Length: 378
Image 1 (spheres, rainbow, N blue to C red):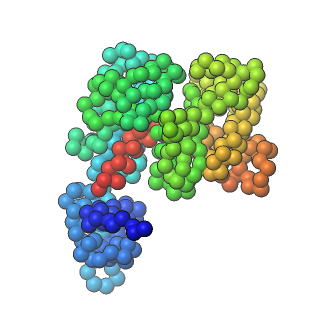
Image 2: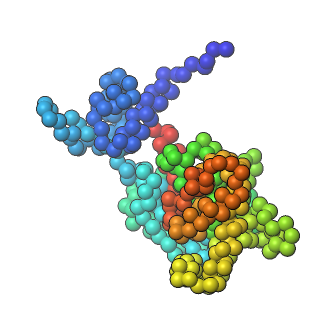
Image 3: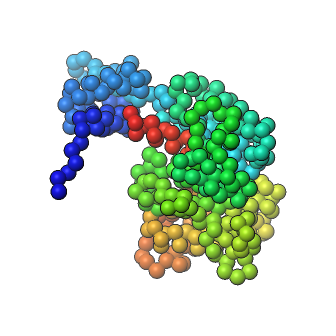
């Protein structure tokens, strides 16, 4: 069977993306560096660099110093040439962040506001947060790729509708309703997918695995070949509703009992400190007996979940969410507990890691979906 031929336009686009990604990865390179590294002709490299410069995606104002002869032009990519905004609406906060082409958060707006999508003032506040972070990051209208809106619920594949929003009772809400006061291109994103995507984007250490989001509710992201696997009906990774207490478990917000969410949400810890998770970990470090008891039970359940995800996916397991931001000092303990279940020779220390994004991972991930789409379309 003959292979389908690649059109000249497809080859041209692929070469342009290769060149741009090489500049992004290496930050400052000469034209000859690109020719040698990518094995492309000088005219092809020159033509594409000219295009990228005209699009204001790369800078040519610097020189690479040589020991002899003329200094070569240094091609560097402009991180803020295009930007995206991510919003995360939680039960008590509205978070908005600006993200540049490197995935770096360059602006943050966070406000305590009770979740209520039926209140137009609340929706206005989401729109105002977007404008504030846009101004903070100096984003021009023509440079804004879009606004990703992360929500604690399952979202349709086209990013238009909340399929399951039992956590905060907003099933059926649409992007049009939620983004009523956002005058830019936007889409809805499942919060766990957004956080997982932020973790793996541009991090080639993680090819396959699972991201566990331990926040006010528990969720997850299945990672296959550096992409988020959503499943046939967008329920992939819904670890929060995995049954872990077969009998006598607490009632979950889904209406059933014994779900993983009932034993490993952040609320199981910060209920002891009136909703202040940071204070809980301060008390834990100080040796508070009640905090230590709650944490010991929490780690036992978490270890079971980590072990199960490892058995299922045989990849890196990332511990993230609100609790993941504080778990660094306790990773060794967690690894030991996971290893008690493992019948194989590998150790949890080889595959269990703390999240890179300690703050604003979900909002950043919602924005990165737009960054990724742009980079794939250059």
